[in-house]
Length: 367
Image 1 (spheres, rainbow, N blue to C red):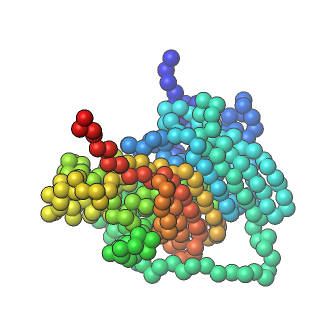
Image 2: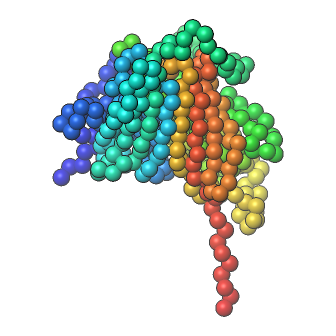
Image 3: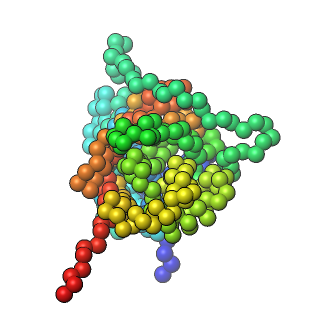
């Protein structure tokens, strides 16, 4: 029997929509229930990961829930748990439960299932637009004063190719307190935007889903980055990575980015520095107790607070800043702020995950 990665035969890509809209498209499964949906197209399984990219489950669960809520309501919070690794070769069913419909707030839960078992669950709260009244308490953290990435001049070769690759493009924006000895003081910044232009038909729902999708990028990996632990630590891994990154422009190619997953500009620079005079040190460090290498890294939970759902476009540059205030007991916590191109704080996110180091092999008995 032929294995199907989607429940129904995927339709042709819609050229009037941005790539992320096609990636996150849902299909109703009316034979099962009125609030059940499935992924229209295959989902991405990053190389080396335990399952599908978590951002896809987050975004499609949000998209499914929004289909059951009036247009004048917008999501303001979303609390997620990754239960099991999703299998990219099996369709996902998103079951939406209408928990509460109030005048100002609506609550939904979504459970993503494969083989009848939950792999992901989330509770979402929606608020009615302008329900806070005319008098309001307002404040927000200001966007860091960082220039937007340069756009290519007319006729010049684009750094990012909108006709191919993944649904998002990104650009590094530096690391605050990079040389600090305290990991908790560091802030990692990056620009993101969806490729192409999100359609008018998709509306703000499409922009919110796209934002939810990208919130999981680089997130838990921040824990290892602030500790300056590269994804590839051995000399053999370093040499292989350098070969793949021989041409710096490869870092702009989504296929290379996906193949190396979390490894992009920052980690590539770390690898290059280590290779340019540190290979012998890496060899020696294998026998030192202080040598650290990530053995396991996987997300456990993920929360998003949407502050201004109508005040941004996901196909325009958004700045994200990530920090890790704590790590211990084999886990790590990361916080993330996201600003729109115009400087509006549009979301705050939190994620905790398993972050375990490879342990030294116990000494063997001489007996």
